[in-house]
Length: 169
View 1 (tube, one colour):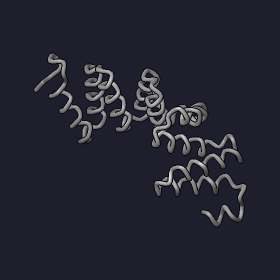
View 2 (cartoon, helix red, strand yellow; view 1 turned 120 degrees about the vertical axis):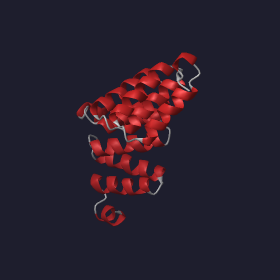
View 3 (cartoon, one colour; view 1 turned 60 degrees about the vertical axis):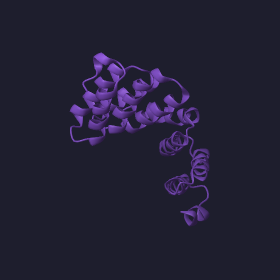
């Protein structure tokens, strides 16, 4: 991708491709720079916004990620993966209400979004909203009966929840 970029340094697509390769290689800071350069060339490029938001969330920079995920969700509110990323970004910002809403929307858009189910349940546990967390995990288990991760989380939650009336073990 560097060769393509050298032959056409004003190609947002080449910068996005290089950024994606760098992100996969774990070179996040370089990936961020390539996505930012792509956005200088094409400020409305949703792929660059999404990819930059993704890398920033994974780096724990939710505040910076929000500004890049917002245009994606305005253009494509039905994008369950972008909703989940926005939930993670909002959670990193400390906006737990917005995070929960984005997790809920992500699972409404894609019932098979295991990460969204788990993210929402884990956030509810951190908020000590155990009954709601169990409810989310039960819904997730119905939606994804073959998910060992969800089955395990539900069993662990039911057995160890600190609120005795919610326990079953």
